[in-house]
Image 1 (cartoon, rainbow, N blue to C red):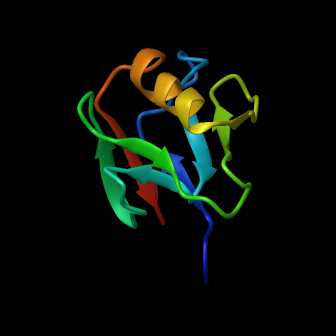
Image 2: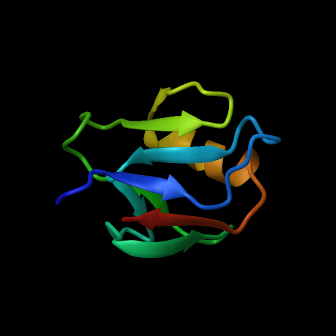
Length: 90
């Protein structure tokens, strides 16, 4: 079975900006990860091209599912959530 999404392990309903899940194209430290990864204030955050062009779809704690650019996902991770954040790609 191939899964094409990641899960935000630190998400919760009390933070409507928490990241519940998103496309597998999220790059942390320029690596398309599998398993577990931690986003810190010093890590590189990017998007691998392909699935949605230069964008990524994510699901937030408020139930919204915006498509974001690399700059938008960096802001979402670094400024709207408490770091470090853990993600898993099942």
